[in-house]
Length: 184
Length: 62
Ligand SMILES: [Zn+2]
Image (cartoon, rainbow over all chains, first blue to last red):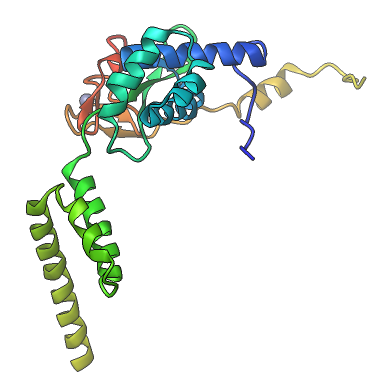
């Protein structure tokens, strides 16, 4: 069961809140980045990420699920055809909220919520590669692991070598220190 | 409904209000422009937040 949202609803009622969130999501997918209050940005994030997840699935059923929230078909088309391929490698975390200080008129804390469209950073991909490598190492005893092995390697074979080299470099001195500690 | 029995003296009012104190904001220094800024917020003078920059965060009136 989903946890109910804490605090008061946005707007004057449940329908008003749904409308506000749908309009915010439409604006976010249209402009890729919107400035709003922190509270609205925090409420928008789960909804927008769910929409992106549907867009990544990409079939007609997913499109109809999205159309229950977003009413602008042009924006839905952009979401499915332009935004979804850009976040295909990303496993969640499609939006980013950055606080930008209070608004002038009513001192409301403001935030920028934007779609995270840049490709995964090399650090993250090496982390993914490392976790995949450890999984493969744990599965190495089984012969069935061989065909699975080739698929993720296409990412960056160059990155793998330094990563494993640094791993060895970091582990070896630690072991040496441990040996020294034992000798002392 | 509970109501006050006596008028509160100016002295008591002021003694109570003397405890209303503002606390200084805990500021950190922007790594890009060295201006003071609040933590976990984009810098109000240059808009930097980490390696990203947010033009919306810049305040001319400080
Ligand atoms: Zn700055």
